[in-house]
Length: 458
Ligand code: SF4
Image 1 (cartoon, protein in one colour):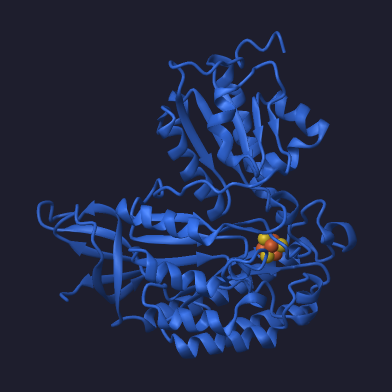
Image 2 (cartoon, rainbow, N blue to C red):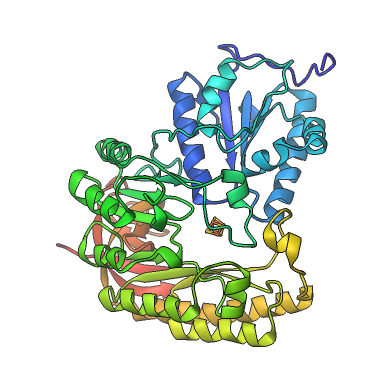
């Protein structure tokens, strides 16, 4: 290590500027927001660009190989940067957890100039690790230790909102998924701590919290605390937060109790992301999803009856191991039957060390996967567009996200891009660009995937 002049680094008062680059899911975004907050409180200053930062944190994702490939590309970028200036490069999150164990991967990371590897159990200890940084040590922190949940912070890109982590890890072991191996078994955060965290955020002006867990619906099943529907009720009645959203929801744990709370509690958003993954029972079984498609459809019909304006979204994987044309047709039939408002659609990619990688063939040809994905996307686009048009005339609540001046009316109106309570994007005009309060808007039209609206009084 003696010849690593450009990468050796000691944390002094003079090099306390940081930059965080985030990949992957909402949980990673929440971890980055809270790390930024912790670093600020510890006297570090945030930089808007990496070229001005002394410390660069890449918060990584391992769920898809494409995400990891992108991160290797970014490491190449920082390796170049380190030739001309000294920075401390930290790899954090799921990919760090996955690679930190292997000697070959460790050597490769060092070759890219990574100075510290911080796995998923150490994400809230980065300020401590920085204060005790020793350039001559390995600086690899990937043991599965006891968990602590950091305090949440308003989101970096929209301070009216915040993510609040309510559980960590997953017990489901879907056969294609690497997450349980990287984040460990599910651990629920104590409900009293969640309530305290959310009340503090409400006091800071946060309007919306999004409760995060790999499967929020199984919150509290690992300890003697309350279950998820009761947690939602407590947040509604014991805090001043105005809107509550949550993800991800596993269909097998979506209960009637939960549907009743969504329908009856005004603060709980009419938004539900319920990942279905496939419309074929044969594939759902191979994926180890633990529900049948008939049960999934019955749950969706029930919640739609209770909450007709629900914004319902899903995830779908096409081309999973053994998926026949008939299985794929079942998925298309499901999409037509349920009519999701939107869907995240992927083609199957093998993740090493998962059950499907070890024991199932990746036997759907690439061109068939691509063809099925395109057919699915085309169908869903049409359904999403129809559902958005059906919302024209509805009245909802909105918070501003960003503002731009309306061309040609420089001093009069501002065009606001807002986020609705049911998680739709809407553009509307407002006179005061600094007004951060909740407004009522009426949908007046659709432009691509965005709703158009106008503010109404009362
Ligand atoms: S529920 Fe399944 S897909 Fe989601 S994190 Fe757990 S194992 Fe992965």
